[in-house]
Each structure stands twice: as structure tokens, then as C-alpha cells.
Image (cartoon, rainbow, N blue to C red; front, side, top):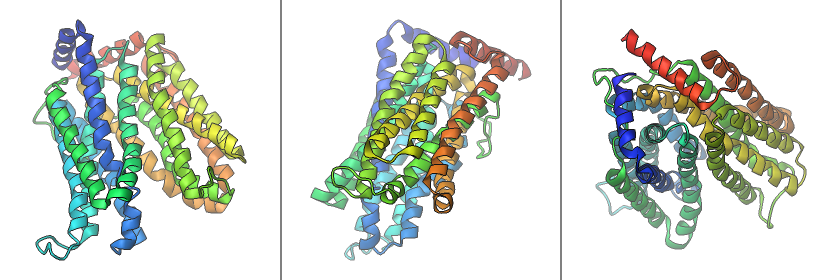
Length: 446
């Protein structure tokens, strides 16, 4: 094994006798990512109204909402390389602080429009856009380190559950920000909502600084950090392509078209219109995903095999989208949302654990960065492709295509796993042996 692997294992050995230490680290990552996620979600129920109040065009509103994804797409690969180069603690804490500063930028954007504050440029759209770009850079660092920390402090018997829990913290932070931001802005005003989000982001930074240890290893500090420095190994590309397919269908296509689908079919709940009802159905998928993120990872740990669990939940996603294509009632739609959410969530934990199982410790950060790049491309392309096609061919063909994607992803998964391990359904020990062999080849090459 390489020196990086040995260092990490010494850290794990020091904590293996006290499982509470690992639990504290995982909990700290979850709490930090959850709190900082408020800043990402709080802007969504507020900004569309600010477009009218501040005179921001709808196009600019859309650009502001998407700016963090574009900047994160560029920052994902360098963030992953940076983790393998300098470790996890510094990038994680700095990423948290950067996101906190970006959240405070929302406050500046609002107050800058006040004439008495002559020392601040009266360009709220520029403040918002800049804050979202900075937010994306910070979130790239946080995502790359969060999963790497989970990989470092876990082993094959707990990695799936750890990944699922951390993914759940990331997932629930955003919708919580959407809900709470909307409520606070309604009763206390927009500035108050952004201030609360900033306070939570600052709290997340303090928690991270106080509790997150260094779990990774210093790599080659002279190695350059490039946007194009992605991991092209079979495990990274296999997991990344599965992530691409799942997020293209779920975040990209479904979330982008759901409100239009409800409006077209005159469906709603509790007397709400299509916009409010779509939020309720999205929340249903998120809750389902959050529950099954942990359960999927836990099951893959207990069965000591990631691939069967992944295939089951990819199949669940397939069934969910088939129901979407057939949905003509609220009941069918609700079941479809639960299944798609369960499929997406149940895939997340085992998928990230599989990536960590197959990747040498000293390259986990880079592999996670590559996975995030492909996931963001999928989530970003989904609306661009699905919205125009809905106008041309309708909803049913789009949801049928989305149902096919997890099936294709399952084929890619099996092909990649067989290429790497020689088996279609390897257990965790086989995956870790493959990772160890890859690490030894890398050491000999160096």
C-alpha cells in the first residue's frame, strides 16, 4: 500500500476502538452540510418576487438561480484534486466559510438598493449573481470533502450507511431552506430570511472547525490543480455515469417538468394550484429519498454487496417513472413520487460507497470530484433537454425515456464492475481487494 493509505489506516486504527469518534465526525459533517444548505435553498422562494421588486428580468433570475451549478461544475474536479493534495479538513472548513460569505452576499444585495447606502454599488443583480457563483465554488469543496471524510473514517461494513447519512444531510438542507426561508420572509421580511441563513451558515463553519479532524493525507503539494483533471479510471467513470443518468432523470427532467405536467393534466392537492402542488410532490420525493438514502447504504453494508442493492433501487426508479408516464390521478402520482424518490435515495448511499470501495484512499477526493462533475452535468442538461422536448412530444415519451435511463445505468454499472473485478456481483471484500491492487500498481508506477 502507499504511504497515504497507511496514514489513513493508522488514523482509523486509533479510532476503531471507539466507534463514537467516527459517529461524531459523521454527525458533524451531516450537521454542517445541513445548516449550510439553508443558504442554497432560502433564495429560491424569495428571488422570483425580488425580480419584480428590484426590476430583475426573468432571464437574469434564472441565470442567478443556476449560477452556482455552473461554477460548481468548473470547481468540482479541482476541489477533488485539492482534497487528495492537502487533506480534508482545510478544504471542508474553507468551503463552509466561503458558502457563509456567499450567503451574506444576499443580505448585501438587498441593502445595496437603499439610497442611503451610497458606498455600496446599487446593482443587486450583480451581488446576487456573484454570491451564487461563490456559493458554487464553496459547495464544490464541501461536497468533495464530505464524501471523502465518510470514506476515510468508515470501512466496508459501515461505509454505505455513512455515505447515505451524509447525502441525506446535503439533501435535506436545501428544501429546509426553501420552506423556512419562505416562512421567515413572509412574517419578518426578506433581509431577515437572508440574515437567518447567514447565521446558520456561520454556525456550520464553527461546527466544522471545532469537530472535523484531518482524515485524509497530504499528497503531492507540487501537483497542479486543473479543471480538466478528472479521474478516468473505470470505477470513477462507471459510478459517475450512473450518477449522471439518475440526476438527469430526477433533478433535471422530473423537477423541471412536474409543474407543467400538473398544470397540463389539471391536477392539484389541497386546493392548491400547479405551482404549490408541485412543491408538495417534490417534497414527497425528497422525504422518500432521504429515508432510503440511509436504508440503501445500510442494506448494502449488511449484505456486504453494493451491486444487488443498486440494481434494486435503479429498478425502483424505473417503475416510478413508468407510473409517471401513466399517471392520471393524484394517487398514482403520489405513488410515482414515492418510488422515484426511493430509487434516487436508495441509489445514492451504495453508489458513493461503491466508489470509495473501488478507489485507493489517496485518490478518493479526485474520484468524488469526477462523480460530482458528471452528476452536475446530468442535473444541468435535464431541463435544457426535457423542457423543449415536452413542447414537441408531450410528457409521456419524456417520462418513458426517463424510465429507460436507470435501466441503461444498470447495464453500465454491471459492465464497469465486471471490467474492474471480473465479477458481476462482487462482495465488498472483492471490491476492496481490487482497490488495493490498483493502489499497488500506482505505487510501482511512481
